[in-house]
Length: 125
View 1 (cartoon, rainbow, N blue to C red):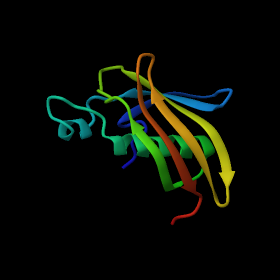
View 2: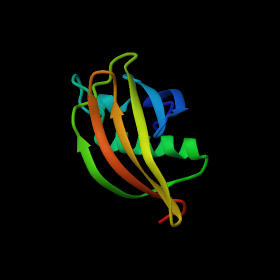
View 3: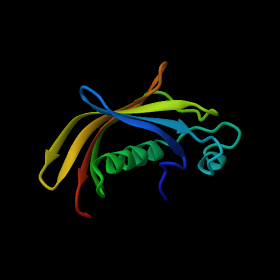
View 4: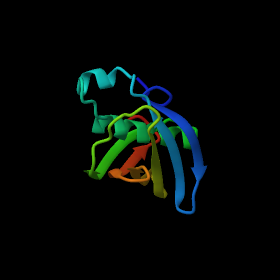
């Protein structure tokens, strides 16, 4: 299951001085919110991690396979509200042997939700 244009709707992906930023809009009608948690939905951390990988794949135009994740910090819960927009900010991108790595900060204008360092392989593990 992919989350781009499903759990999150892509608004834009733009280059920045330090990398790139993807503005995504939450889809509060997605079935994941019916289970996590009914009546008080929040975005699962695993979904944020997977979405970050999908954004990287789209930006690079090639399949990526998560090899390692470090320093994942969930700082606030992301509550899906109609029209809520969040920004996945990618920085520190570097090519490594048969893959790449980056740092991701997920935030909106008032809160930082997650910070993480991700390493991807270009080949299945």
